[in-house]
Amino acid sequence: MFRPTPQGPLTRIRMASTFLGRPVYAVSAYAFADLLIDTGPPQRAAQLVEWCRGSAVRRVVLTHHHEDHVGGAAALQEELGLPVLAPATAVPILAEGLRMPLYRRAVWRTPRRFRAEPLGETVEGEGYRLRVIPTPGHAFTHVCLFDEERRWLFSGDLYVHERVRYLRRIESVREHIASLRRVLALEPELLICDHAGILESAQERLAAKIRWWEELGGQARELRDRGLSEDAIARRLLGREGLLVWFSLGDFSQKNLIRALLADAPGSSGSPESPLSGHDGHELFHL
Ligand SMILES: [Zn+2]
Image (cartoon, rainbow, N blue to C red):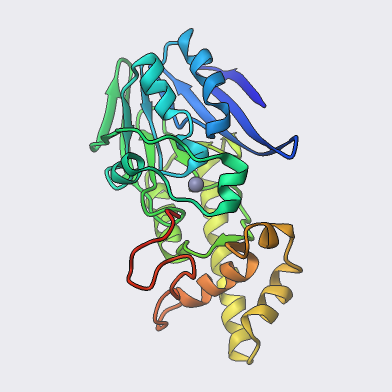
């Protein structure tokens, strides 16, 4: 699937990979002025290059290093000569090439390596000025882009859904909530999300997401104090695990969310080490 939809001065480009012949897990990139913000999965790179060829896009900005956001960047750089800007922490990962668990390689394919330039504090061009806001949690490299004048927030994967029920092992809920608060304080009006699309009432939505995780965390702590295991708490509060947990070999699960909420509680010793990380602190995969 490759579906560009103009919405005023923005164009949302929805893309999905196909897995076993079916479209799976759509993700969006956005064209705005001379910018393309994120680039979809590697499987759609050729279509994205063709679309950009006839567009006003002259620069690419990436919100984080994940393969469903950086997949078209190498081709856009090589074939159209477009400069690519990425969060400074993502630049070495993108230059080295992503190391991904098999289930993610199967869905998205592995993006080709490329050299990105590190983002500074702003991205400016004719008629726009975007502030680069560090927003770790979903990924340690994650940034949002904020247009102060229009009060638009390009939020990458920071929002995704109000009630996210699954978490990857590596994600930190505490950092993620702090990032949500940081962008909420900017008082955005439009939320431009790589999964949920272009959403009004940005502040209400961000506040609702914070509330959902905080309330869930409170309930999880209460059940833990009553002696329930993480598995039992996850089942009680979120129901049965779906297929995603099997497909991702446990990388995505409801239990990870409960564990992260409990680990991030005041007085705890922090998140447990990810089984997908090496023991010497060297990451086996770029999560
Ligand atoms: Zn992501």
